[in-house]
Length: 150
Image (tube, rainbow, N blue to C red; front, side, top):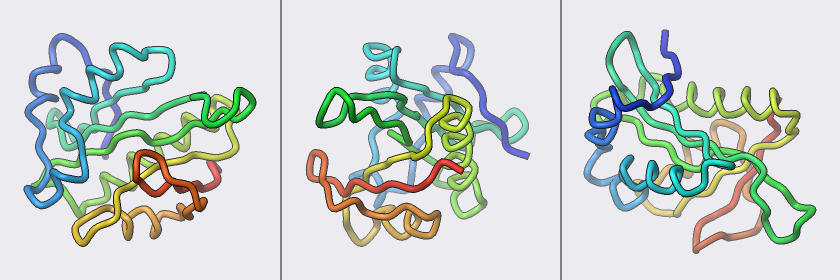
């Protein structure tokens, strides 16, 4: 059964070694980059490792209560998702999305958002299968999508 693990000085190097499939690299940021962003935005970033036993199989970073277009438009959701190349297709991505949804519910949020870049090897189909629907917005050239947190 997968579980979430907080990133610490004991596992950060192993976390930074996690890689996705080569064709997916253009659609995801390296874990080290995500951790740097989390470090400078600790009030909104929620980075976690996905582990199966003692093995790191993925990384997720949620975001909570970022100001979107207006001060009264606070959003939460999945900021980053990296599943190790040799562990894809085993449900770890779904587990990550469900973990962010659960944390959003715990914090009283009704919806979770994510973004993706469209492309042949991109994650669009994955997110659509998990119930995300495009909002019609874009962010940094990426599709913005939303789904209920419940």
